[in-house]
Image 1 (cartoon, helix red, strand yellow):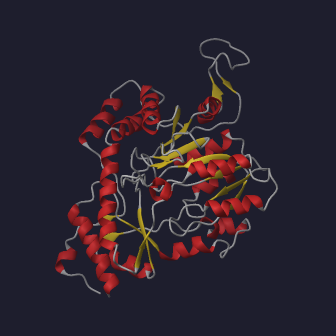
Image 2 (cartoon, one colour):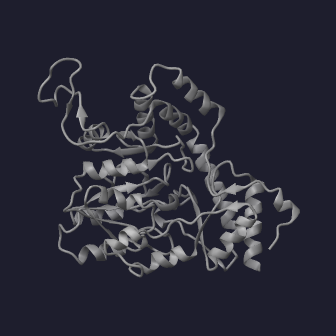
Amino acid sequence: MTQNSEDKTQKPIPYGRQHITAADIEAVVETLQSDFLTQGPKVAAFEQAFADYVGATYAVAVSNGTAALHLCALALGVNEGSRVITTPITFVASANCVRYCGGTVDFADIDPATALLDITKVRQLLQSKPKGYYSGIIPVDFAGNPVNLEELKALADAHGLWIIEDACHAPGGYFYDSHGKKQTCGNGQYADLAIFSFHPVKHIATGEGGMITTNDEQLYKKLLQLRTHGITRDSDQMEENHGGWYMEMQELGYNYRIPDMLCALGISQLQCADIGLARRKGIARIYDAAFEEIKEIEVLKTNTAALGTEGDTGHAYHLYVFRVQDRKGLYDFLRQHQIYTQVHYIPVHTMPYYRILGHSKGDFPEAEQYYAECLSLPMYPSLTQEEQGFVIDKVKEFVKK
């Protein structure tokens, strides 16, 4: 198949990309010219701004989203005796954080309509084991579609489990609880800890970076210490105090700090977060309308708990995902026309590492069927109307053929 002359001049359209403004650049340059490149005031300022944005009491900025997951697992005491449940449709870090601490990962299948962790399957898994067999659950707000954490929290409490909300895809996302109150992803009302990523394709970009939010003061203090080698300078916590220089390493921690210049970028990006979120929702509405009558395309549904009575949605649309039978054919066809889609995700349990640990292909049929059909279309605030129209036209052209 050959491209026409119009396609040959088409600028490549990625599935996601960062949007950096002159104000972002100015904020970073200002920090580069300041006294602190790391461990300075911008870190705390970013933490406070982000905590305010999601409605949490505390926030801890770290080097990336994977570091955030690892610190959460450490702070909650995950060890070789821990068994944790998560979804197979996620980036591998959601499961790997448990393995870093020596724990065991079990998976529960997804709801095929949303690709979110199926709470019914989680309930069945918990009921198949004695109480105390599992330690916690790591649900994922996949694609920006928020999990109903109120429902999951009730199940977790009944079995004595903690929850880490992987909200990397969902800053600004929300769902409505049983009282009709809006619950923002990462606000700590129904999860012990929540984590976010600031990778360039995410809503808020710092290059690399992550954030942990919580309402638990003890977990917050634990995270701060683990982030910096397990060291404390707090005289109230130290066993000795030799002077102003003195510090104590009280446990094995890590260097998971994030520098001030990246936090400065994060603060600047956060100021435009609502604008970017509104743009993502607008792009999603255009896609929805374009594909509504195409029977060969099945767009993932928004979690019903995230749908408001006035037609609003708490879906944060990090990704726009649909299912199509000839996914490989469409993927290749779009690449021929400079449209670079992506697949999110290869089921974690099918990865060679996890198969060595005892998981097998065929274990979670809904996740595996979803993987065979899923495709993520370009979704980012700077996607132009013309670019999105070109994407839609090419998808329709392939489907018609």
